[in-house]
Image 1 (tube, rainbow, N blue to C red):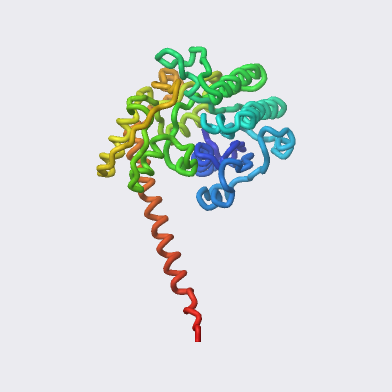
Image 2: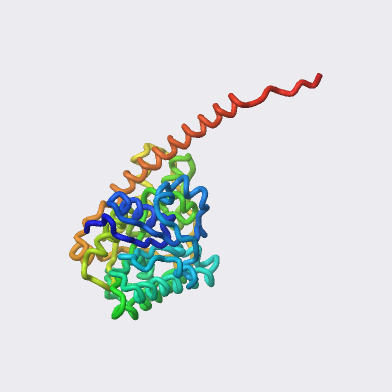
Length: 337
């Protein structure tokens, strides 16, 4: 699709996926609007770390509040709905708020799209909702809802389906996204990001259990391609987004360790009860319909590590420059005479 001049609404542009998608759309000439309340990240920090915030039209407000949507232009072409809490941990800490934002956020997106004849809505769901299901994790499986986060996303998919006669929509069950920009999520980042930061800063990573648990980690560039192609196709409903090949936490650490040349060994601690052992996407629909051939997880990890090393180098340079400036401007000691 030629995005030049297209009016696009991205909810949650300050976030990990939103910032990566926003940068790509800006580079292709789209006119971007975003609803964001910066509730999970500091606005001033975001402006520095995510320069595109200064290049898009920010509509400040809560997506779950109806009043916010009165400020959105009605001539939007497409909506990418990426806002909301995206962590099992966040749902454990504040389930009421997370449910409210997740369910009513999507409800308001769909209502706005219905009233204003939006061409298509693409929203993110999660591969976490397959937890407890048998393998392979195909879209046709009815998810169990193993945790609060998954249960909320199951409800969202049902909600989107109920609007299917009025709003053309597609849900992408993104498994475990990782890559540049994720480091801003801090403790809520993927284990790849957490392990990488531990290695780069000389700490032992913590692994729950024996490290043989498996997840399907997909590089952020591939998720962005999936989102963009999701608009281009006629398909509605649900499509998995992953690599189709799970990787254990031990294998993740080995890839990081080998790439960085570190001898640090992880610390293994007891895992939680009902810990999910394996999540792996069936990617048949993704490859056939979205025509997406994703990076391998190992390739994505190496790209991400190179990015993080560059970021750390730049931070060190800035820090040294700041020290020099402080030393140059520092007044002499006060005389006690």
